[in-house]
Image (cartoon, one colour):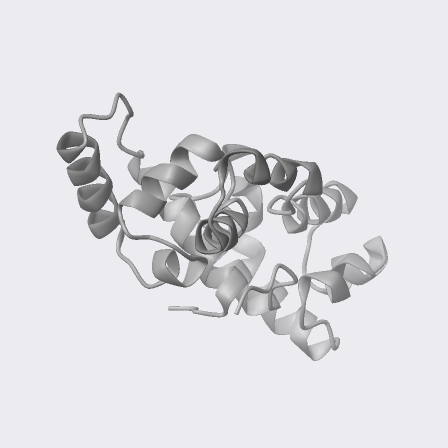
Length: 175
């Protein structure tokens, strides 16, 4: 089930060097203590954490106000702009395809081309992405590009790892 108000435990998979922007690397050493302390404070989801004051975030283990602000930015990093979804109806006609694209568009950076590649490669939902390995996604997309002679690039490893992490956070498939 899709859950963009992910559980705070999802920070463990989202806040890693192999799938996060470098500007957030300074938060990585805090992730375990944050998860522990935020849960103790009754903060179990992203939206719970967004309600916390800067002082509460400092009490949760962050070192200073700048880190608290960076953490807030990180929490909303994967929020989707609803206008991004509007374009789907202009090129998707089948109900199954529309539903699939609406899910795949939740992944950072995914638009028509990448969603179509994932769809054609058999990744029709965030659950499909969440339960796949990076190697499997890369192999299947590479195969479909070659098979259909598409002038597309295979997704990069970091991109795929990010998509898997976000899909796991949004579907509660935390591994």
